[in-house]
Length: 165
Image (cartoon, rainbow, N blue to C red):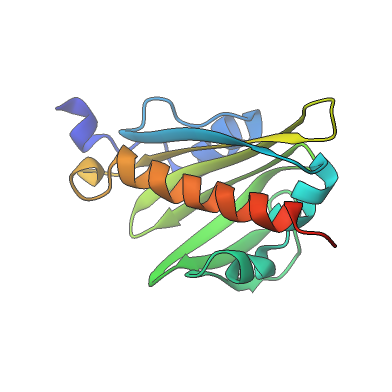
């Protein structure tokens, strides 16, 4: 029952003390982690992942609404999944290694970590993990739904990165 009303730290604390420290809020009521092997080098996966405007072309329903300062630490951006608008800020921008941001939408605070690990044989292990906190969130958006969204996005990035240039 306590997790049902968990609000988590402030967005600023979440950004500075969680996301910038390369971690999600493990106490959040909704968390998920999934990974996929991509048969492409980390630099190619990074190109797809860091091209926020290109997300709409690989995953229907995703779209970039605003990105003024590019993909840079503390730069803000707005994007949408379907009708859900999300206001985010980059926390970690480590090319070909990690892209992490915090975001808020309808009072839900989240940390998204995208971690790329070269496998040594020319492929990349792409891990996506996220925490979401807001009162009552488990009642309308659970871990299974979040995991399904992650797995769809991972697959879309994989397909795009493995496509011949």
